[in-house]
Image (tube, rainbow, N blue to C red; front, side, top):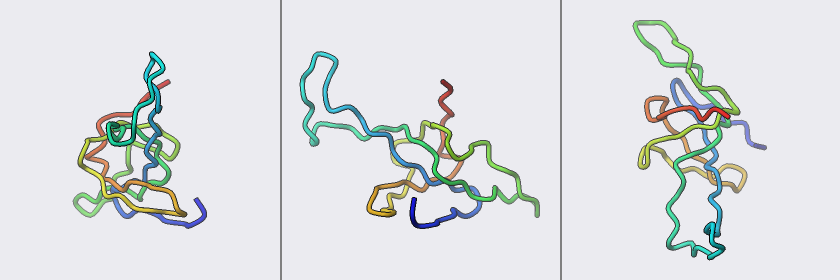
Length: 97
């Protein structure tokens, strides 16, 4: 990411993972029929959630692959690429390999 953007507080910047354009059977899926994936890679994280005057660190780190709620993110364009900004509460889980 050429632009340096640091999310505030409990927000994270996520790059949505690209979904395959073919089915397992080899059929090509048109863009209009695709659902946007709810999985992505964390690019940057904020300093943490503020609670009772203390800053609590986030459970996710840059580089983590996460699952997130379908309509929870704000879409932004950074360096010509689409990214999402969402709160830690909207993250459903971390994908472990």
